[in-house]
Length: 341
Image (cartoon, rainbow, N blue to C red; front, top):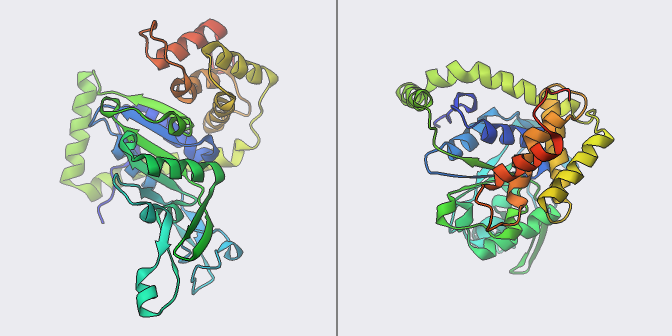
């Protein structure tokens, strides 16, 4: 099996890689939407994330990756009730996929050979406790979008067809990528992504040369290249684990709550999802950087990722949504100061 390009070896695209790290620290943030040009490392980052993430403890052969034996669904035939460590699942959801492939359906082989009505799990079962990745998410068919919205809301997959009535957990971090020139994303699904980042081709010659150099080295000797960057990936993995452990202890001063509310009001963000996501992202960032309390520096850094995709369009404002967020941050918080501001 070909080893993916190391996450730590990605050149530039700091906002994209940071957003993915933040969801690894706190999956409750709600996933990442990566929009940008072709060939900017979107898929590479997701593949590298799979190798970077710490393994999960799960019941061996459990189709929904249950952490405990008692959590295995009744319909699952799990021969050995033992706990093993396995890589965090990162499951691809391809365009044109059928609903049965996503949700699961009747196991035709068992039905024909044994006369049994058995359930064959789908992609949602495999993605439980992991990541579900959708490339070209803006081209996804509407009925699949509706299905994902239901599951993302409930954290549970319900299948009722061919005499089957199956229910199983389906809690995953949704990662989507796409090119905005090829179509827009439905607002309902857009709102389900916690963070949104925009990636562009690097404009710096030295950075472009470094991308080419590293890619050539990877193609020439993949094993050696992965080994070379393995230490950096390991350090980043350890930092993620430390941030997970310290996340519960990160304080949220009243001023941080006020700042979140004032910023979202200034931007005209609908509902309260913007404030809640911004705060979770800022707490994950504080934990990642070793702080025990959220600061305005955390809010500044997290605000574009958490809010740019929640803004209403302003036909009189030609600035991008990320620039509008930073302009509002500047107006409310003033000029940039230190992380201890």
